[in-house]
Amino acid sequence: MVQHQRYNQLKNGGDKEAATLVFVWTNRGYYRRRRPKILSFLLLSLLSCGFILASHFFSFSSALSHLYFFGVQNDGLSGDLDVNAPLCSSISNGSVCCDRSHFRSDICFMKGDIRTHSPTSSVFLYSPKNSDDNVSSTVDGHELQHEKIKPYTRKWETSIMATIDELNLISKRRNSDVDHSCDVIHDVPAVIFSTGGYTGNVYHEFNDGIIPLYITSQQFNTEVVFVILEYHDWWVMKYADILPHLSSYPPIDFNGDNRTHCFTEAITGLRIHDELTVDPILMKNNESIVDFRNLLDRAYRPRITGLIRKAQEKTSGCALATPKRMHNQPKKPKLVILSRKGSRAITNQNILVKAAEEIGFEVHVLRPEPTTELAKIYMELNSSDAMIGVHGAAMTHFLFMRPRCSVFIQVIPLGTDWAAETYYGEPARKLGLKYIGYKISRRESSLVDEYDKDDPVLTDPSSLNQKGWEYTKKIYLERQTVKLDLTRFRKRLLRAYDYITRIHLQSQHLA
Image 1 (cartoon, rainbow, N blue to C red):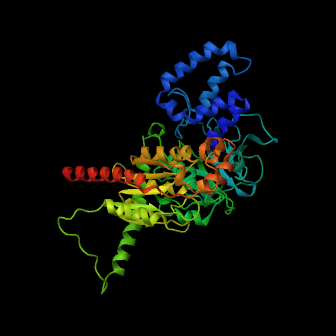
Image 2 (spheres, rainbow, N blue to C red):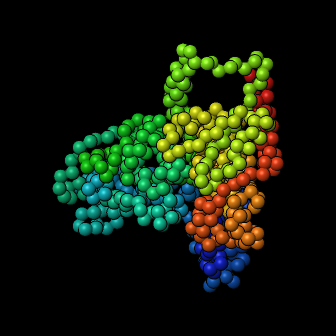
Image 3 (cartoon, one colour):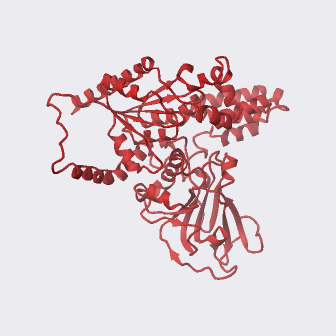
């Protein structure tokens, strides 16, 4: 949404260069799929138009560098690659290398005698006494190199990045000043990142944190220590099932632990590929979002087993047993409705439940709260065949559904088309889900009761979105509820039911 709005703002404001770059970035998926043809076309176009537009647009060489910066590059060049990207893939002992070429995040690599110093928000790399000054000229008499980094994956979003703690990465002579002995010596690398920013919103926790952490640390096979800036106990507890599958060691609270931790290798910052996804082309071992989802399954399986056992214990003794299904009675597909209250709630949800049950679904209504244990949500969705929800952060839970055999129906309120597709629709398809987007009509939105029928809020939501995120948030996200046209929506339910039934039949034939 932000990129789309920014493009229109820049375009309308006359900044064609910036608008073009934002357009290329926003449509990077299209360009990647058609990279050879698109690059050839762009090169020919720029050669043809360069002399005419040179003074008003941008030079051929700068255009190439900008396209490269936004991820439109040849396969051999560095871009949104894994942590072994060519730019910093091979650094010598005693070196600091930072890759700042990416739109979403910076990432820095250190190798050698690495020591943390939380009181000054610094990580020092001490070089041998007689090493050559093969980096920048000395700073402050002692420093060989000084890099600053905010290890959070929303680099382009200046407002939120302003809230992220900055870390100093400093290369020094070993004998440069006072004692710098180690309090804790680690024989595995460190990955340093922040859990500040939008942490607290489940979409951002996965998109900006957990998935990039998987991308960056997967190569170490859990032999890595996580060093966390803006450490939150609740975050560590919330993801306590997942973190041991990424690191075999307890995480370090960088700001709260004043001890000197020593490493021989460290990565500061996280790689991110796209919205809620893992691009196998950019991974060392071709891992995909399905592999990440498999990790979630391994992570939550023990807890789910415990939850099931506890539920069985509660129903033991004199409790009524669940009626057994007749031998020839087919199992009903399970449909989970992710329910909301307040903004973007489905106001006729009870009628939706009845309609789904009439079609043949076994309907479960789930309303996740910020304190709801993720393992319980995973258990509910992992055992489901379909999920319905209105666009919002809770749609992130599509990651808990089974690839290749589940249906995700996203209800798309007015003014949220682009965000719904970009943040959840396309990622769900990449996971292997059957994705069905349901764009509501004007009469299904509560906004029809607030605005005149010819108001742009109803007739041209994109014009409101172009005014900025605050307009989108205030009107379309915070003040809108949905009353589904069940005659119209029933077609999506039938499509989902037919797909699931067909998948079940195919599975039975293969069994």
